[in-house]
Each structure stands twice: as C-alpha cells, then as structure tokens.
Image (cartoon, rainbow, N blue to C red; front, side, top):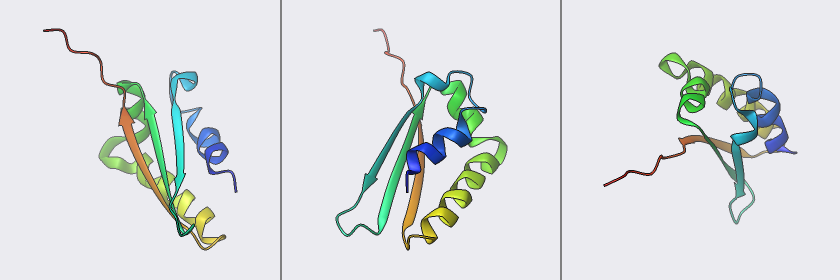
Length: 87
C-alpha cells in the first residue's frame, strides 16, 4: 500500500504550502511496523496537528485502519522545519 500517497491526499487540502511538505516512510526490519514522518513549515505543522491534536489523531486513525488491512502498525509523527538561529 502506498502510505505516502494516502497521507499526501489527506493533508494537501489542509496545508498552505503542500509542495514544501516532506513525507518519509520507513519500514522496520520485520516489515510489521512503519514510521511515517511528516515535516512541514511551522504554521502547516500546527494545522496538521490541530487544536488539542484532533487532526493528528484523525490522521493516525485513518492510517491505523489502512495498516490493519495489511497486518501492520503505523506510527505517524509531525515535525516542523527549524529556522536557522542567528547569533
């Protein structure tokens, strides 16, 4: 199953800059667990998490259902791009 495509379809309407969103899908060695990292701009990360994490939890639930069809566990994490700090 193409988890990156599923995530992209779900989050593109939510974020302001869909082209700047990076999605990384990493399978573990046993093939049962999949880590998905979504990196985006700070404002878009806030949108993806949502108030009280409601959007993030919804996305995790959708992926969980998709993963169960293949007997896999999906872990979804969000990160924002850090701006370089000037000293």
